[in-house]
Length: 298
Image (cartoon, rainbow, N blue to C red; front, side, top):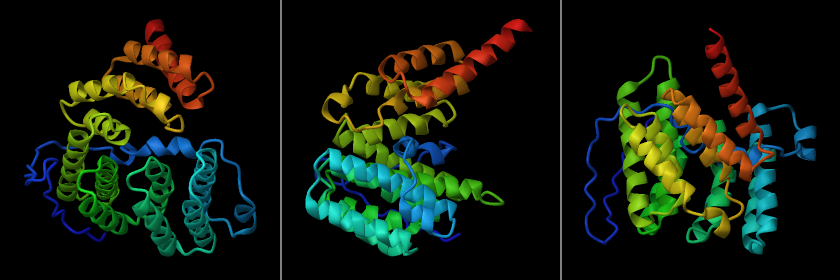
């Protein structure tokens, strides 16, 4: 596996020098750090292109994510140039030109870096990165965005996600490359911290850090603090297209993994009062209920 360029960013939120400190956390599970976007592909139907192309599971997943992103762009009345570049990237994916699709998406993401549209486009960009393992390209692109926009939280959160996903890839390798897992995991967490210093209410960074902490030894307290903060942000009032139901899902998953199943069930039931049709929340609650019933019958 190729190694992405080392992080050389040292900007601070006040224009000075931000000293990146090493951490000793051994963090795992980074594939889930930015799976907040996975909900974007649920329920998306196959497009005609998917039906005519030679079956390719990766392409099908990417196109499903593109379809949901397209709907969101339409619903939020995105500018014509954004839609134009997005549609170009979709056609490039259909033809198998993955690298050009990333370039096309990157071009419009750069223009939209200061707007909520960035997060919507990032969902499809990140799906390509994960399915085709384009971690080097993602890290380079996000590093460039951070250099151009050192005081914006979203590009920082995107860079943190790219580092986290690379850490996950090193963890899945045979044999796992643990030094690289730790290195990229720490880079991910460091940039999440910077993003939250810049914008404490940033949804991408807050959820990403909460999930990251949840996989860190001794990180439960930090994870719960981030999840609780998310529950009071009222993000949906400003950005109704956010996958906000995933806050409840990952908070409950964190509690479950730390043997706090009763509390996890409470969080899921709370989530279902706002998202009664969400299948992920339903299945998670059903699973916890079955486990609790088995334990009670023993």
